[in-house]
Image (cartoon, rainbow, N blue to C red; front, side, top):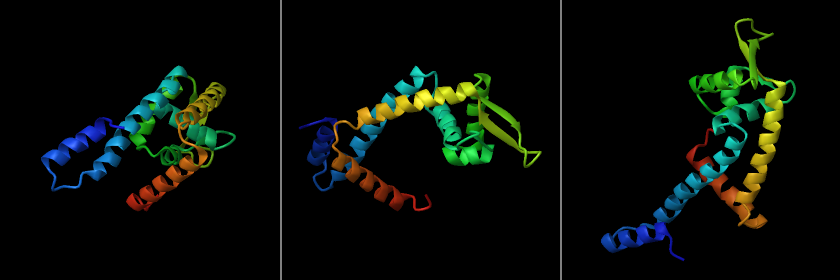
Length: 164
């Protein structure tokens, strides 16, 4: 079966037979797959009036457990985004009535970001739809292939970023 990546590799093999272009098969397909997956994931978030970044913040608050709140630094850590990026997302979510900010009961100078009832209800619905979508996207792979792929990706990622 020939795809765009295979055609590109064939052209390079013709033009530069002295080079091993096999890695292009992996990286080219990973790039195309990542772009296609992002489109599919965003579609579900948009159905719930969210961006993927906004969903990420709501999901991090939900994962915290009741009372569904975190400090901004813990939230940034949990979402792996910068403080500046987090502030913009929280501003939008607060304006939409999905989160609130209040002074920290532990540190009067600090703040806490918490889900509102509307935010909790939305993230519950969005997360269920998100998981159903992820299951759909994995449908072409059987359970053994999924487990093998996850193991390979974890190994590769650990090698590239051992700090986790």
